[in-house]
Length: 114
View 1: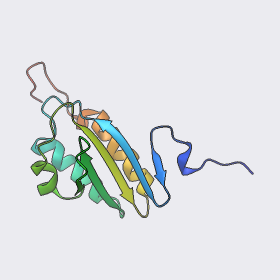
View 2 (view 1 turned 180 degrees about the vertical axis):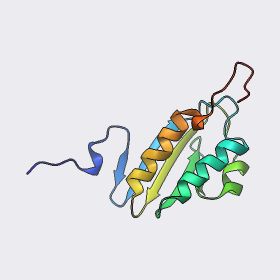
View 3 (view 1 turned 90 degrees about the vertical axis):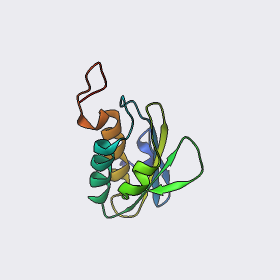
View 4 (view 1 turned 135 degrees about the vertical axis):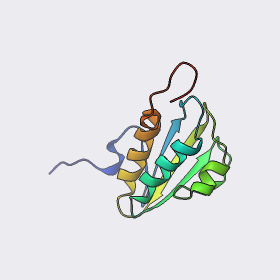
């Protein structure tokens, strides 16, 4: 029987019990208040541990903490690594990566306003 494993996705890395993906923030103003709330709400909907690293800093932040996410001052062009460990971790990483790629579902005008 042939099936798909967690590592079949070319844009996610399986670290045994941990999943990880990298994504560039393209939202015009980065993760200001609204996108940070949207990100942490989605992260909190998963039972796994979720962390992010910003621009290769080596510091992993709690992806479910609005204080940590806003405090990281994540700007347009920042590279985020998202990792999750535990139940539904792969699903969580994929959902958060797609949220960032969709600019947090905010339609941005030419002046950077939603």
